[in-house]
Length: 289
Image (cartoon, rainbow, N blue to C red; front, side, top):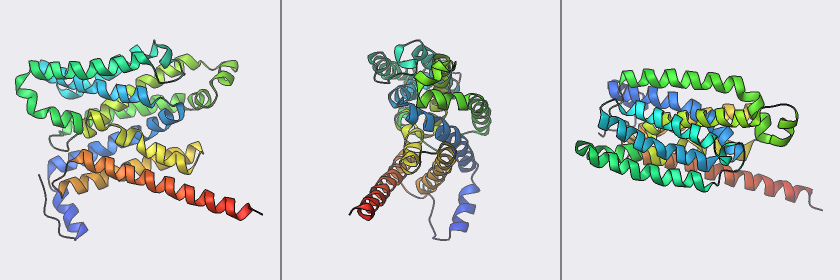
């Protein structure tokens, strides 16, 4: 669906928000952007992006299986994300170590294959495969918004409770372990949070483009600042702005939401990286003899 852009931004916003499905899209997008930015910031810091990508992929067979069984895609996203996270927590890659695990990669391949199997089993679902993989702002219900809000509130509460020791363990796991921090348990809790967050974000971006919100805004911010409080706040702001601009652009253009989310987020990262490189270059020239 494409609206008629008039260059009167207030009028365009009023027109767009007069449609219930667009209001739900903005509400859902804002809700998922917050945990995506916060959990994604820790994920980038912990260098667990590959595990996060696989947890996002798991959402595809989860949603496909749920629709096939007639229980709703949201339940499938969340159930498969949590189960996969618990599995990863039992693997060496889930103990706060590296993320380049062959086991994680195997799960990712199995997830994509299983997703196509569930699509084939539910023949009427084939036309919705693109939305599951690449995202859509159509069809988001008020009930889905409420469920996303509840899940996000729970995830953020847990993150707030474990945030300080998790930061310690993420920066230096050996020193944190020596000070009595349960590094492995925290790694498991974080993976569950990551699975839940990826499942939420996937309902907006699709399983293949979760990183548009889960990685790019936090990675962009970490290029600019290493201070945790400032970085977390900036990640949230950047993620929310990215979602809002992408939804606006998707409504008033023929191009899909996933394209706009990824392009806007990637553009921000490139600008931040280039700006930081220029500042560093000027700083080196200033101190050179």
